[in-house]
Amino acid sequence: MDRKFMEKALQLYFFFKHVNTDNLNDDLAERFRYNQQVVYSLIRSYLTEDRFAIEYMDHLNDELKKIDQLDESALAPLSIKPKSVGEIQLKQNVPVVFNDDEEHQMLEMSYFTKDGMVFFRFLDMRKQV
Image (cartoon, rainbow, N blue to C red; front, side):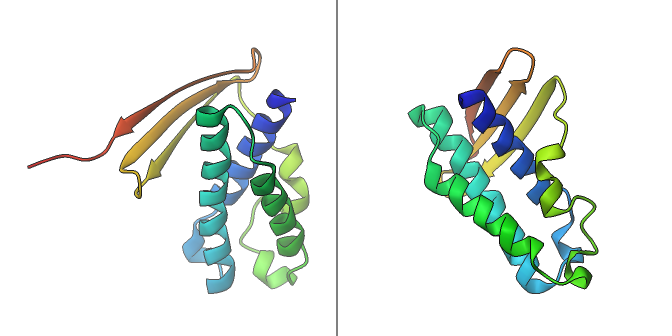
């Protein structure tokens, strides 16, 4: 089950990151930026607490449904439509980097689809000058 959740989380990450938010209307751009953070929180909770926060996944699934109901002109800049998220093909090695400005950390992770393995590390982004 963890493998299924991780792959769904990564598909959601790629959906919310696949488009330049400058090309979206203001409301949709803000939703995409916010949901990028929700995906990060979902993945971080799994890596640090060894559990998927179902409330984050529920929120993201609800957002997909809401976005899918927007008019076609709002969805035009999206090369991946909300209904197609589950069809996003993950490579054998899926590298992802998240910046956590609040914690002053960067999360680097690689997910290996064949083995269902995640390798990750947190890096401190603070620097004293």
